[in-house]
Length: 66
Image (cartoon, rainbow, N blue to C red):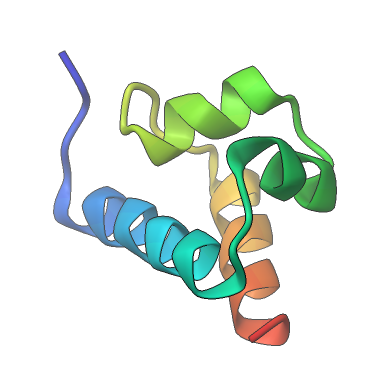
């Protein structure tokens, strides 16, 4: 079962919206974020909560690459 928390859920939603807006897949996003596809997918699908550093990295990427 996925770990769900409001902030975590919001991050996953932002990731999905970003991918849709920019027509990107998980592989492309993982490469851009310098993380494994497996780790990225776990975060996006809410199977695993991101570390504070991963959360900062993802949020910064989403903000600075609109």
